Length: 374
Length: 127
Image (cartoon, rainbow over all chains, first blue to last red; front, side, top):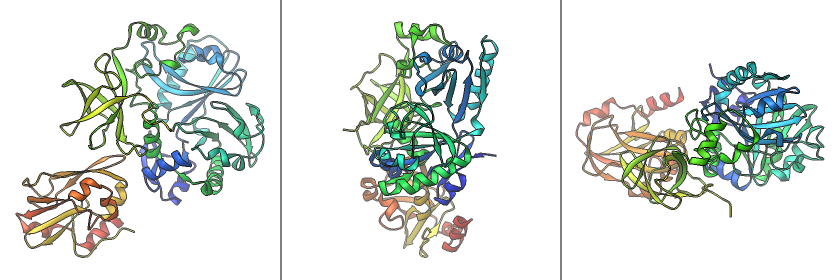
């Protein structure tokens, strides 16, 4: 039985096409992936992200515990700030990529991938059992729903959706006063909601976590207030094309337990100098000696079918790699993708080929992000 | 609601065929294009290829996925639609007319009897 979010009936009412994703029944699209994608790039879109998991870690020992598990330096967070980070096992492979927020001194909120809630929580509990220190770990995934409101026009209406100043975490007078990666606790119709200036689309925007009831009301209000600004409800299809254009990794595609942050090109979020943490020695060695495989972004250069995950990548007439994400780019109107190739086989600007149904098609390795607003 | 023209025969896998003399024109249904949405690429069979009923012989790609298209009937491909290769969105906008995919010379016209009538296809997509 698939799990349903608090917005399930809202999706049905909007004519959303529902699919299975990470054990949840989620809307892949409402009208068209392209329309929803372009609405987010040009105006605004609202996504149900209730499937994502929430874990809280609190207590005097929480910071040290998390800093030994996560790759980024959590000590750099002030109350009301968040950071992108990764959780690796001892061999440096990625258990999950996540956002860690410091809500207040000794109180942390982790937002984890839906498909990884079980392995993450098992890993966190096992690590907690062998870590001395005073802290409490709670899987609160079932308590929360969440939405993402994304796009360049969101800042024009979000303060009308959630009016007033924050009362916890980052103290600001209005939601739009939050800076990138900051999180504040606000009142919405007498419910407490957490609002962060984050997202997974490459656009400005906010992610909002709250109870099922608050998020169901919030969804309706975002639609009502945002529609005149061009906001559309957007599904997982657009979420995937948006993040692929800006080269944000998706667990299970760019990241898995056999891939390290260095290989995936997210070494920026690995603080090798912060002291010991899981995977550090392997990651430090990869940083020094280089990686064996490397994630590259590419664009198709000739007219072809869009690249898809698992399609082979050819370099200089040899089959060397594999596509992990690929789609038609709604912004660029061409096929784009991300894939792994052995390090040293090709660099940015080099011609490669993508094998599509037995036939090779020309592509070129491009800098990340693939799409950047001019 | 999807349109189901009355002059066509339908395959359970959502292709239609329009028969004129010895030739059949094949496309995907309005229901199918509505389900796929945003068609961005169409791969057509080579002219001269012989296909069997139920054989995958074309691919229609939406933003999200690639979908095989099965020939509803057996025969030899005698023409493909260059307009959909240039403008795949025609399959969305005119699925039963300008968005046709290929024509074939029927080698076993009796197979038409096994296809769905418009009323039966309408029942299938309603259920």
